[in-house]
Length: 306
Ligand SMILES: [Mg+2]
Image (cartoon, rainbow, N blue to C red; front, side, top):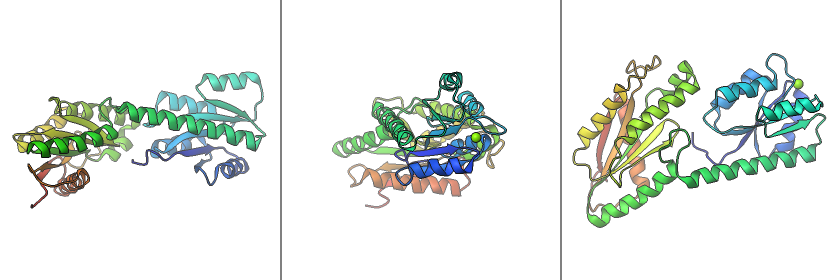
């Protein structure tokens, strides 16, 4: 995932001239993605989390713009998406219908380029402001556990505290095995539910006051655990508890159910370090866990040698 800051606008119109005109309006300030029908638009939105605004033609063969928004409402993508209808139908009740479905705006064709451009920019600004507020709140909207920003802050503080007290601190990076295949097989709503359930398991390992469980991005979670007596035991239980959820996963090559791979580092008491270095080393060990066959944890001291 990543790229929280990036905003993309998806333009959906069966008419190539309209698509091109709208795209030229937004380029080069905004990243633009194009689709020429409803089905490919829905696919794009689910595949590209940077899409936050959709300019949606109402009159399209096959699936109408209204139907596209109805489908988005019934099966929401991971990210927040706002819709602006672009329509040749100038009846007041068409506009009312579009707005009642949840569109943030309704624009009539033929469009007035300068006005439409300003409207789009206003909506992009509102979306960016809402995202900034969510980050400040510190929580991941989907799973309810801490978000990456909170975790990064806690990691800096946790390391400082550990160094001052000459105590160890552990960091675990956790990744759901074959999650892309899970989404492909079961669909994104089921994928979101799996993320929530794994998040609950990860959070159950952060019980003490200075422990922290976070969704680090996409299907990746992180745990910060000061002073763990037995890392082997803890990481084994973490992997087993996820498997014990028994969430069927037909697309996994390592287990019939959802499993995780973990890379963890334990900061040696008194060692010099950077939070960034710890994260990178944990990621390298996570990679090793995947290389060794997934559904397992690999951990080690950090730095590797003093
Ligand atoms: Mg059309």
